[in-house]
Length: 471
Image (cartoon, rainbow, N blue to C red; front, top):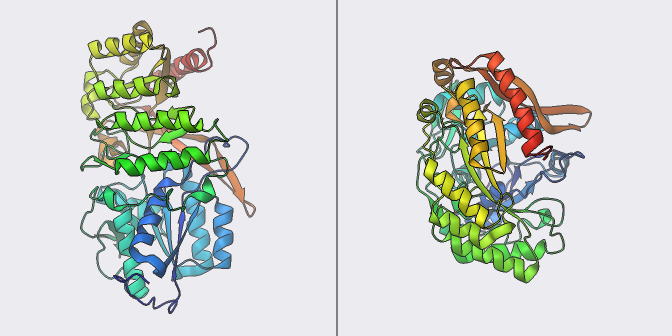
């Protein structure tokens, strides 16, 4: 038993607290290469084991069927679920089944990108999206979730009697919040769930490996789940990262077709990222893995970003990506974003061309103040600049972004429709579920007819720049 936490679990006597984590995904013939190791819940589970030792038993799940089968063998005391718009239906189904099986004898906590920092949104989420959940974690999950475990170990019947730091829950339909924890986690205190073996079950299968080297995005884009977060950019200990890279590379050496994904929001934002890139390159030389690396480079594309890509070269999956999203000045202001300059774009494309690296830009139609005319002008400029690939996306509204808040929707007269979300569908125990996404179809600055016309252009750009038809 951990010396610092000698609690007796009132519910189970002296038995270990059974804590189960789910980061669910879909399993069908279309999703084979769209499954990733559950790094997020892995880190939260790792922190819980460090803090509570033998007082808790932790387990990780990606598959809903395996998760629910395990609950039949041993009832969970606390369940933590990672929620995002691509797994909402899965999570709602699991929460419903847990309540049917165990009633209020299980504590269900939700966390992840979908949880907004706005109190009104937290209330709506708990009342309407997940009325059977107990609480939501705000921002990072390690410390907040450990607070739930600590209270449960002490006395599970009084867990939600008082506010809990880092969490929010409802009491008589009012939000009760503890002290904000935000992004205060000291990453030097968190061991790697890879190096402790916690993730091994997911590394001998078809899951693509995820590694995170730093946390926090300093940019405040209102269309992104990271834009609502305020805090400090922090990096994991670099020696730990290097050991993780070696460990993962050895595990995947016989499956070089798997892509290494870096979960950083801006890889290349820290000067030390060049050293990490060199460590990745060394793994490629020593273990023949990875062959390809996917990451989002720093939005500002500084000299450090260039050095990172120069080190990795053609291992970088999509070469150089400059995600402009929009160049409409009013739209940029409305979404709290500042782009690279015209000169920086031209310089970057010329630089990438000399390295024989492809260049890509990503654009979003549907942002506030964007018009059909301004977006078509951006498409033309992108072609003239010489981007090798131009990806057009429609603006998606989701839980956890500032543009989803009612006052923002009203301000810009944002109208939406729903569509199925790719191949995210499945069955369990005779129950069929599927995901959807909410797409912006009109605002004060463009009509539904404008939306349809841009959708046609979007299809043309997809066939040319993604499928290489008549490129």
